[in-house]
Image (cartoon, rainbow, N blue to C red; front, side):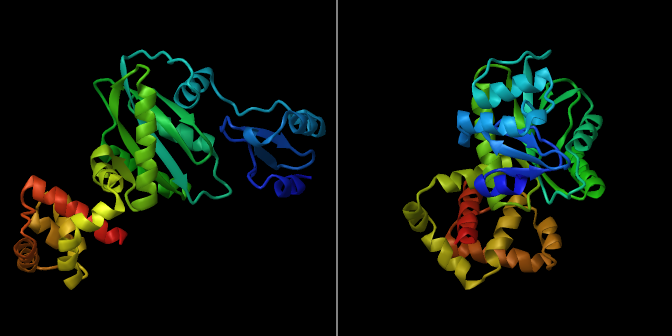
Amino acid sequence: MINQLLKLYPQAVLADQPNHDPHLYWFKENNTNDFIGIPKSILSEKERKLLQALFPSMSNLEAPFSKTTQDWNAFLRANGPIPSLKKDSCRLIHFSISNIRDTFHFDEFEEALKSLFPNEIIIVPFNIHEGVIIEEQTDIQMDEEELISTIQAFESDFFFKVHFYIGRFYPVIQKLRDFFQLEQSMFTLSLQEQPEEQMITIEKVVPLYTYKAISNHEKHLLFATIRNVLAEEPELSATIKQYIENHSNATLTAKQLFMHRNSLQYRIDKFIEKTGIDIKTFHGAFFAYLACLHEEQE
């Protein structure tokens, strides 16, 4: 029966347990361990009632949300009222899990997350793959290095890949939903364009976000001269980009690129001479960085 439903509703998902996605109706066939989640948006009222009649034992099945989780999910994604918090400010830490094995259980991941944070957190899953962590602002916070260690521990224990976007602290007001939507857009962009970057912050993604906002016609005009220089040496773009990301630290960049420091300095000086852009200044570095992003995209 479930296989027939999958053919009828190709947008449906099959799982060994219902996840936390509020946009799905979940049904379970008797004598099997399979659940099927069908998007609420594609079911008519008549179809929903028919499915509830066919699967009476699971007709009202909902994922086990806590009241707090439901409130935050409604606020962030469905224009619900602002939930209450003990503190006046919080930040959102977005996460995305990929390469999940059949043996993965979200509850275990959730418990592991809670045990790693120094303070109590609220986890709002959107589905088995993604969600957001709500962390109130206190004197003790999980920093970026600790989250990097968390990534390594999770990938070792659960055998999956996880990405985090660490949001900024904002007041718990109506505008928090707008910040959530903006951060989701930036997170999605980074996942699509920079999948190798697993720890994402606004500082890391804003250059790419800015680049994407420029029209294609303007990009070709802005970066035409630099592209001619970068085209002469295929590895130059990656070298300049790495140098800028390392805050103009030539020693560190040379070490990462497995090259002699003098060779790196020669490349940098040659780039500055040919383009007229001093990448040792903030404005020069920012413009050159966008040009390197353009070279990658092209």
